[in-house]
Length: 240
Image 1: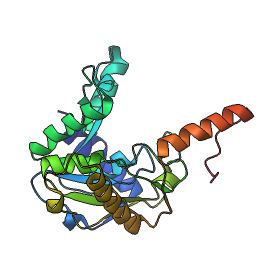
Image 2 (image 1 turned 90 degrees about the vertical axis):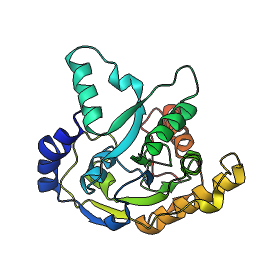
Image 3 (image 1 turned 180 degrees about the horizontal axis):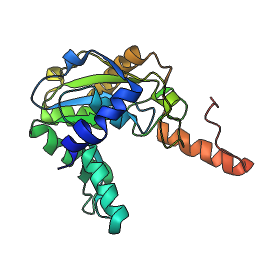
Image 4 (image 1 turned 120 degrees about the horizontal axis):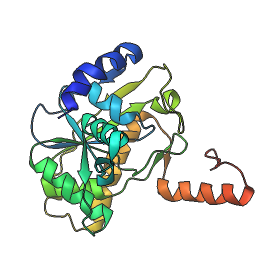
């Protein structure tokens, strides 16, 4: 309902004029049909700048709680999420990962372009962390290609905790599609899922130039938080 209004009238034009994001490889995004945009995740604003450089609508997955708030604040949150291309994930008593998979599959099978952050969370320090295999499973089940994407310098423009991005050159680099025909029918094969996911992360790293860390980003964040609590200070994301 609000997507076109936000992208083409209220948010898109002024953001593009002020920040002037650049893009490479947009020709690698198919003009129709389901596909996954698998991107690194450096900043909250990644989900704003990525759709702005593409002609097609880009959907993202989000908690259904974003759409159920009451009053003016609830309406504003719901409108922003809809305008940003976020589709609600209804857990229905099941695990969040399974609910996200089901919702994502529905979008892909409907021919949508779905944005996914395989790391599962924003990078705590600008490095690229190990991808979760949900992106591979979703692509295999939906029989759609995975397109690697690198967001460039969004974490400099908008570090964690900063609400509005600073004016800094921001880029989007898009690689060639990774076709999954060799993995057909192997959505329950853990080795196949890990192999495909690692291939996606390697492609993202080549596009972004980030240092790769073979560990779970969310677990690392929790470790930093525990260490910070024990010191009585803020988390130190520069720690190895």
